Length: 348
Ligand code: NAP
Ligand code: ZN
Ligand code: ZN
Image (cartoon, rainbow, N blue to C red; front, side, top):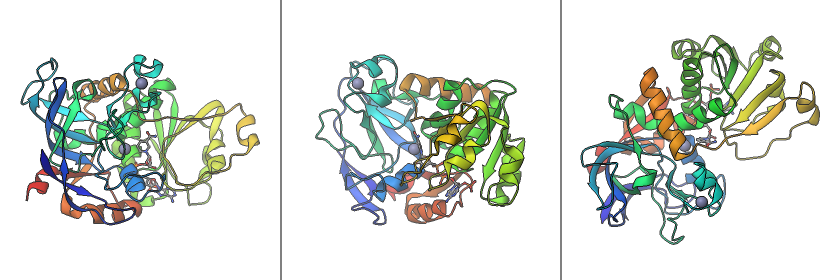
């Protein structure tokens, strides 16, 4: 079936309307009428081909929430009318070691990314949530717990799981001192999630104007990294750092904020590599780690955690026609804290 979408036709081109083809609903598929789709900074990196190898035309969007409009004959977990979510993956090989251990994001055959990738046939391009409908394997469709506002839940499907997973991997617990670097879409989720786990959270931001928001989101401390004294005040104090910055920056400076055996987890993806000095790691046995989204089971756990703790994203809802301005505003750090597309605007 043909449906309306917004696409980048080439690297760096403004997004524009495009009709795309969605596959017919197979026996184990779910058809979702998309209500909302969050705008992740990864959408910008990829639409601008900052990570190379981008496939065009590209329909970004991997923070999808909608209502189930049809289900295949063998689908058991979803019924027409249910609220459902789709994150960064729509399929994987399901047989390899990572797939068997709920880490489909590391599928040895490469997961079918929600966009800028292919289905597992390795031919059919995948298109993301800046569109009106999507067809997804049931196994990669998330159940939205009752009571979660769909627009504010959409960003949980990427920003939520990407920050929940490293907090969980590194055992975040009451009393831990967690630093969140960069207060954007991922950063604001990291603050809410770490606070919900009982951590004492400090935000490290370039924007003085975000201080009040940081406290409202649950942070205890706030440092403006461009102002003198901020790194000195926090030196050696933090147990865990979650680094969400999307642009080049000096990892060494942040590593110095960790106490002995502390860890800095990189989730932001600056387009260029950054040198790390051996001494930044050796002093204090500090660890530098990375984290890529989370598996499907962990994403479901995260949604349930958010429902239990009343955690949702702070969003600014936009029509699809405003997407190119939204990208510019994100590049300027001007988003509080996630743009979410009202996908009914695609039907206009
Ligand atoms: P975002 O909403 O644009 O937020 C990024 C924040 O980083 C900004 O709000 C700003 O915070 C800070 N920042 C931006 N430019 C900076 C600079 N030059 N120097 C210092 N700080 C700067 O982006 P997002 O959607 O949260 O995504 C953040 C990064 O995570 C992106 O690179 C994205 O691709 C990546 N990501 C990774 C995964 C994964 O699985 N690992 C998943 C999703 C996204 P302040 O104003 O507070 O300084
Ligand atoms: Zn994302
Ligand atoms: Zn696999």
